[in-house]
Amino acid sequence: MADTMVEGVSLKKRVWGWMAFDWATQPFYTLGLTFIFGPYFAVVAAEYYLGLGLDEKSADAQAQSLWSFGQGAAGLFIAFAGVVLGAYADSTGRRMPWVWVFSIVYVICSWLLWFMVPDGSALMFGLIVFSIGFVAAEFMLIFVNAQLPGLGDDAEVGKISGSGAAIGYWGGFVAFLIMFALFVESEAGGKTMAGLAPAFGMLDSEAREGTRAVGPFIAIWFVIFMVPYFLWVRESKTPNRTGGMGQAMSDLVTSLKNVVKRPSLFAFLGGSMLYRDALNGLYAFGGVYAALVLGWSITMLGIFGVISIITAAVVTQISGRFDARFGPRPVITFHIWVLIVVCLIIIGMSRTSFWGIPLAEGSGLPDIIFMICGAAIGGSGGGIYAASRSMMVRHTHPERPTEAFGLFALSGKATAFLAPMLIGLFTILFNDARLGFSPVVALFILGMILLRWVKPDGDRAEWSKSSIPAP
Image 1 (cartoon, helix red, strand yellow):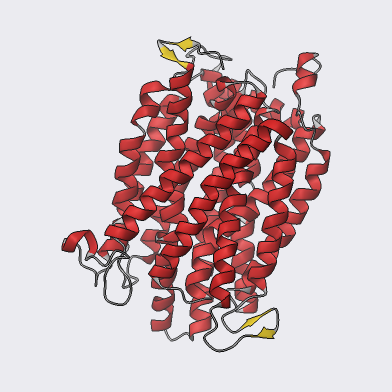
Image 2 (cartoon, rainbow, N blue to C red):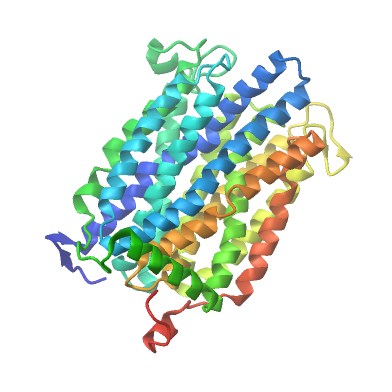
């Protein structure tokens, strides 16, 4: 990698600054979405519905449905607003101001999660604030991903994408350990996993202040660790096009029309739309499933988190190496197969049986199996994320990277409401949080089928011949 300078900052520093974003934002997904706030929201919602007179199974189903519909609404907004923002940013040549704006929104919303009290009175407030924070995080990701093509060639981009994602998971792991050791209280006894009072006794465990501190913690973590990104990441301020929003929308329409003329990109966007939607469903509901179906305690969720995050970091790093050697497509396909198997296991497992085979009362087999599933979800989810980002680079026109990753976000979010809402719908239909996962399998399978039409090297060959105009 040539160590070129941009505005006095070396390429090596720009790469490290770019990877700092993953470290800074991963706790929102690790702690907020999957392991702490998501399960906490589900438990609070389930207890609230129990108080309204529902039986336990119905209360669990209602809690999962509420969470799923909130995630679906956020995904729908991201899908259509993200691509418009990307087109405008490319036209102006400015991406960093947008990162600043959404950073502020992200920090505020994360901090406000503190007010999600355990009596259920702030249930909708917590859902709305988390959803807005999620939108801000995903919008930032569009602009940050658009900077990836300028950091190296195809092989280097595969390694950088994998390394950045792996570093992010390690950041999530460190944040996870701090939260569970010093803040998150167990339901019984009010102590943390380290046997301490939350924040050394400064927080009220009965009011679940240790768990609620996840919001301010995510905000503070982001403010500290985004410093390298803002110090070292530089971009050209030269507009790619002129004409403001009107020209940007015209360019966007042209880009959307050109997608149909590019079979490989069209198949990739369609396939990634489905399998990433399914993956996000697993992320959003893995901890919720453990809390509602298996009845896991905070301690069990903590162990689950440690295993899955470590696996995610290690497997994502390894996947980046395989990406650099064999390309991203086989990496994506392998991990999709792993996740299909995981989904089938989840659907067929409960506390008392495994695909119709009764289990002994008090059997620990479901716990062991789901721990393994968590490791697989973490590892394969990270591998898919990094390899998909690398594959998009191979389909990205050099003059329109943010718009391209806006389209990438659109493909990942255009149906982002689909998996959560299908999970919610099937959960209500079967009145069972476990069977609510059934649609996810079909999404993975359809996404993998579409990958058959994706060229391993994307559209690079066509651009080199100038047969495809800039979008």
